[in-house]
Image (cartoon, rainbow, N blue to C red; front, top):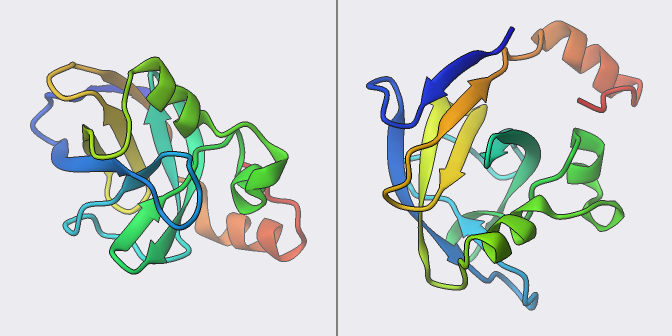
Length: 145
């Protein structure tokens, strides 16, 4: 059973982040703040309005960005195959290039929540997958978390 964790809980570290545009795309992406422990190519869970999605971090000239959030890890690897939930979230919350957002670190390097500044959110935290089983599944192309 997932644990519930509010954004104002003492164990949650909140970073000020911005919506940006990266590269030639017109779609919004999330500029990842410098204090977040992550690297180019990492996959994370990104919570948007109570639902956890899969996202891949990528580097550009200004640092790390999340270009999209997808229903599963396979779609995060091949983003043209699925709906980009980050774009939907930005549209629903009237967030555009340069707008501030809050990125809550729920599980360092694995799970984050995105919210509009000043709005409290309760996240349903899921456990990290077993590393050895995940690596075996990925080796055989079976991982679709």
